[in-house]
Image (cartoon, rainbow, N blue to C red; front, side):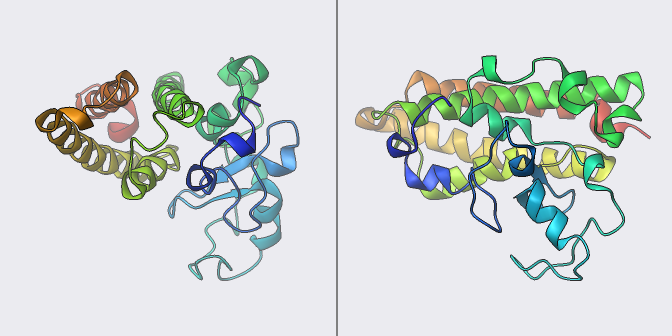
Length: 223
């Protein structure tokens, strides 16, 4: 893994473990792959999703379980979270290898797969910036808890249908606005000026906004 748990701020790690059993997400053990529910954005390990699938309410937030009629293997793994935990060399690079088991992905047409791929790549770039921040003690406090929650809320988005695409667009715009306000504050206060990592994150978010606001946006506008 890219860093030891001891070197990582505990607050970041709260978003890198199962929301139900609190086990750290893993790649090598499929039972602990992170799976994000399509509507709520709640991310659990594959094992816990298998346990709760027949329940009427989620034991974590008491909301309705969204997967009663969806086979677990149809839900895609949340690779952007794994990008934070692992070196890229430890994870498959080919999207067909990553999601070949996922029926949602395999039934997409070419354009839809390209949209899914582009969104995952942009989320992956944001994840790489977060990993840089986690691994650098100077930058670990660059974001407050509220901003960290918003960033991971975006990374815990599911982008497999129209509804989720619109949800991502709204969340991205909101986060970008907050980051820009933070950037303005830092420039007004020289001692708080952001680092390259901070600027890089804003750049990636702006790319994501542009991707989802053009008329060629595949995810939001596909039929």
